[in-house]
Length: 284
Length: 150
Image (cartoon, rainbow over all chains, first blue to last red; front, side, top):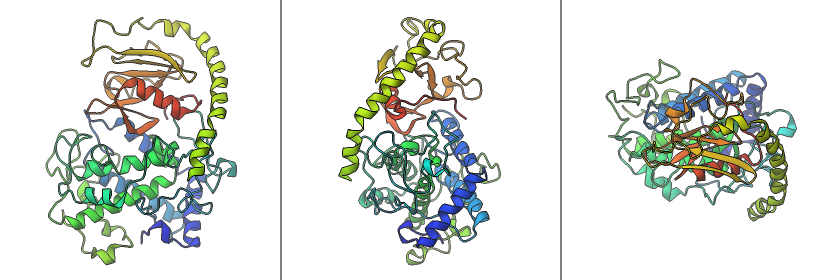
């Protein structure tokens, strides 16, 4: 069961953190950072796009998170990804930013995270896939350019959109996917990357473990949207230039289609599924 | 929360000191690379205006040299300092025909369909023009050097 991080027990937090650190120590974490970085750089509005700025933003990240979660569970099979509801937990000094979980914001001088398990000084979290010379994790929670976290009302306004995505299927498209991703409208997902700042503002954003909690919530929002709009579905259904339609394979896997990713209940549950009546799974 | 904001402002003297330090280091770098920089056309790709008009800047911002073009510069041009990536990810394709250097090193950038820009160091934030993007990158780098992308 994927839970809201605010409800994790101390043991659950510790197990998650230890599994992430173990992945890093075994050299299996950084390939996720590298893959994300590669897709960030190759996904363009005027060329092929898979992971970002196109319809498969959501199914791509669902599979990406599944792969990561499977790695974590290979280390500790009690671990599942938690999600961070950034409309609720907005205090930069409270969970998930505590010393026993993800650690706090970066220090003023250079943005370096100095508290918690991912502080460079602890010797267990060195940034190796990076775009500049700094090898320490950086954050400046809420300090970047007056960005504030989205409100529940803003989130609800995006969940209310009934069309999944539409032409031109990129960063200028109207519809749920692009407003959730954040290139248009109130901006949800992109804005949270900016609010955390530091590595989360870069293409190498998975260097900050909060990436997984952020995207887990984005993933949950897709499931929430499906439930609100049972008659809507993934678009485009037919092959469309430069983007991945419903039954076409996504890179890098090659054997995973958006259709394969539509029903999260095939793989995991969210802690809110019962109260919202999920379980049968949304249709295509 | 206020403490964080106050701390952020209080950081500026430190940051400034760091930038001054890096500026000195960069002076050395610049001295070592005049041939590559001198190979740049004086006014950018003059006479071959990009769709949105010729644009170029070459300035020092917070101790860092930033340069920008709206048309592709051949890979034999600037950035030939051994740190420049080649092949695979052509800047011409991703940069929408533009290029930005920070202290002579390529900043990976991309043009959005609405004409705005993003860079690899501010990848979830759009900028309306290249100079703002370059300055934003300098702010985010906070004195650090760009390194080749993995």
